[in-house]
Image 1 (cartoon, helix red, strand yellow):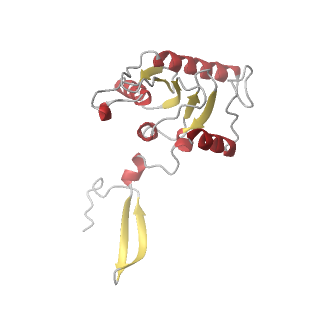
Image 2 (cartoon, rainbow, N blue to C red):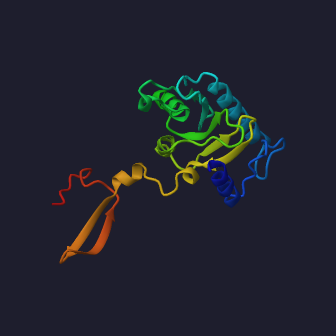
Image 3 (cartoon, rainbow, N blue to C red):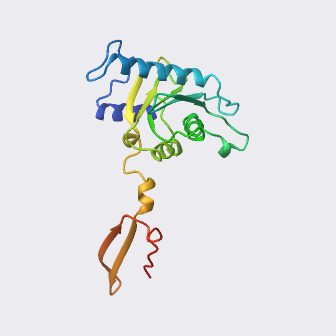
Length: 195
């Protein structure tokens, strides 16, 4: 049961799932931060209204804030060829990247779910990861309540751009690994030849 699993995860993370966004700034949070969160969630809720989802009837909206404060919204867009559909989170990210942005502060995700928080699919988590691990993701319910997580918390031990720069080299002796070394640059970058 997904709601039982969600409750367990939320308890482990000490998250109060039924709480609405605080009216006063939370601990270590300014009124401006709370206004930003509320505004971002409201934009995600508005973006959901444009969802094209004739097959699932599951509307999702997203609002992505860049580091300089610009907001890009997105909704899910389904397709008769199901695997060609695009999620709201990726729509917002692709819009931002197509406008020259690659550094993000936060994204809010909304749906019509009332009893649980909307959570990004694995593909959206990986696309978010492409642009960093420390930025905020606000998972919401239809009433505007939310859970604040980071990309890293949603996709721990993730694969990212830096992993493509590592080259694992094994030293073998009699068919057994003796030592492993990691190189943090591509041999092609320096014109090296490691034959």
